[in-house]
Amino acid sequence: MVLEQIRTNTRVQIILGLLTGIAFGFLLQKGGVTDYGVIIGQLLLTDFTVIKIMLSAVLVGMIGIYAMKSAGLVRLHCRVDRSVRL
Image (cartoon, rainbow, N blue to C red; front, side, top):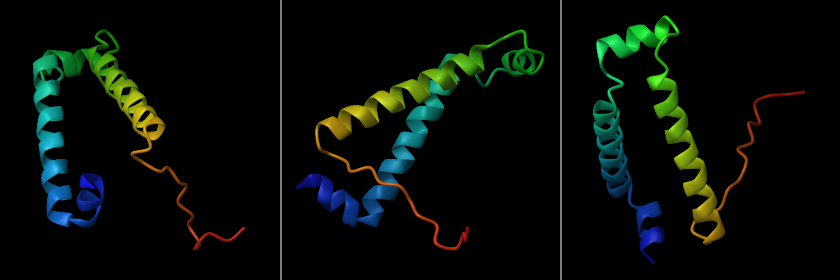
């Protein structure tokens, strides 16, 4: 299966991560988040473009993970940190 090959191939994982990062950066640029005025407006709490775009990205990610989990393409699990003692 293709997904199993991706999980075991580090080079493919790096390439997919790079392509995803480039696409995300391109979309941020097209959304106007990198504009100086937008960033200053965000810091002054007068322009909420950055928050809108980031919340949209989080929402798309949540829907994507849910869809992949429903389709059986991913398995979600909690990471246990054994160095922390209670």
